[in-house]
Length: 366
Image (cartoon, rainbow, N blue to C red; front, side):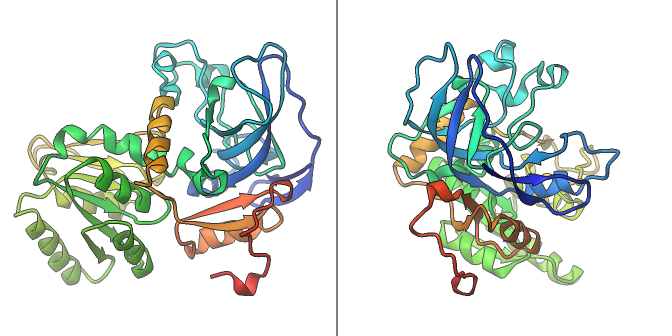
């Protein structure tokens, strides 16, 4: 089968031929319908050799939708031919966090060497994917796998981050989304769907702000100008909250300039939520942040939350903006990700699951 693999530190990933995996006891083999492209992939491929811990070669892709192809011995509760999404943050299944469906916070995964697909285990940028346990599969129930595959991360991650802040996202509150790209534009929709907050989107790119406004942001501002311009912009944003500042600032970039911006925009009793995989940090202290404000860095989400995200999609309240690529075009999808030219999320579709909407003409692609 074809697979898109990161094979050497510092070199671009490539499409190669590898054997089709065979499911062992308790495992499930999927015929991949779609795989999502994520900034996390770019992050791990940017790591120097002394920091890289994900194994080589690594088949990329931690967002996966597929059709159940075959079952290993002892697998029950799922049928061949069923269309499913893969819950990505695999855990041990036995610790307290896992018993709550929060395998994203598994207490034993690191010790036992359990890693998510595409982030240590072979991922979904291939024609087939081996899933370690049927509990990591969630039925699509008729939803389109191509348009919904990114919900496993680009939907689940912001939903988990926002859900924790619901007690302070009350009527009259302001929620700010920094970074209106792949995750941020979904965060805007989730905020509009499950909170009464005024939603403000910030990004350095005007087209990302246009997307945020199109999917529901009440206000959108382009950031990154001169210091005086930024000061005026921050004053304008604070005025929209009646001078109180934001109840919650969700940073989907996570570099130092954005975390510092978040700290300047949050209000008394507010939350700074750093979701983006970047090196930025937040200084929390008596003289550095408003009283009673806090900062947290959530990771991915729980299995039950993924089901809730799918219900939002099923009722039409959230939708991921996507661009389609074939598996052979995967290198170009990652080039577009690196260049920042994607509108929303890139989805890679293996040839055996060919999407009729897939455009093979590079000149015709927006």
